[in-house]
Amino acid sequence: MRDLIDNPYVNIFFFFLVHPWLLPAIIGVIIVAIVLIYKQKKKKKFKDISLAIPESRRTDLRFGYYSSLSHTFAQVKDHVNMFWSGFYDLDTWIKILKPADKFYVMDLPADLTSRENGKMVAHPDRESLLRMTFQVMRDAGVLHKIAYLYPVDEPQLNMRDADEFLKLIQTVKKLRSEFDELKNAKIMTIYLRGQGFWHSAELDVVGVDNYEQKSESLTKGSHADLVRNLLAGQKTVLVPGPAFGHNPEPWVAYALTHPDEVEMIAAFTWFDHPAHKDVPYTGLEAAPAEFVNKWRRAGHICMGEKGD
Image (cartoon, rainbow, N blue to C red; front, side, top):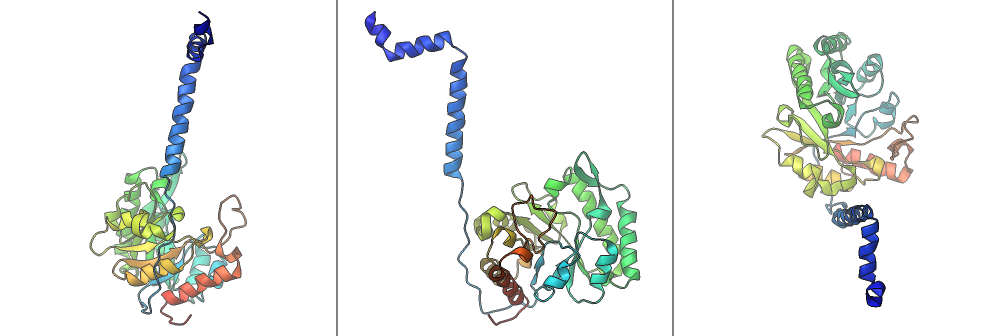
């Protein structure tokens, strides 16, 4: 009997016999710990690819930044040939378009969408709203400057479902056909990583953002997955993250060495919004000068310049 009392295994047995509720709790903790350890070991560490910028240049490569504030154009116009509309009104956008000669991307969700339960849906009056906007731009003599039409950013995150996103694309296609000034404008979007590529076959230019993967996403990550889904004639937009510390060299090198695939580099992002200090990134306008100059040089290279 003394041997049984002193036996630790017997004591453990009687302990759980008296406290049976503890056993499943302990098993649960063990399972969670095993899963966390497994995920940590499995988690990939992404890095930049090793790809040198070639001597050759392109005349058809677009370079600029995703979205903008009203002051952004003045800060970046010296090293971009693509400029993206942003968080300001139509009058400001028209003023930016009038004097300058760039390839412009126009964000369209303000005319195309409304919100239901926190998600975007196709606005019931989207066709008339967008037609009115295009007409105002036509009357101002700037509609012909729009090279890219952007229904919505990261549709899998922002839209209620894929069907609602398709409604936006169909509306943009219809309106594009109505205005001769837009006959060569391309429809594009940037997808959220890991959520599929909703209706990508309906678009001319597609991209995917994955800032954690750095440039390795080009060869074995999100962008590589996107490329495998491309159709004949479709092109891609690369979305590096200078706001997350990405260096431009591998992205520029990839774009220069893949002319049949890459249409544009849309870096995220230039502006450092003072009202968005809750986000884990810093816009380039607030970054150290040495890093900013790297991206300025990248822009000049993408625009065809040879010098360092």
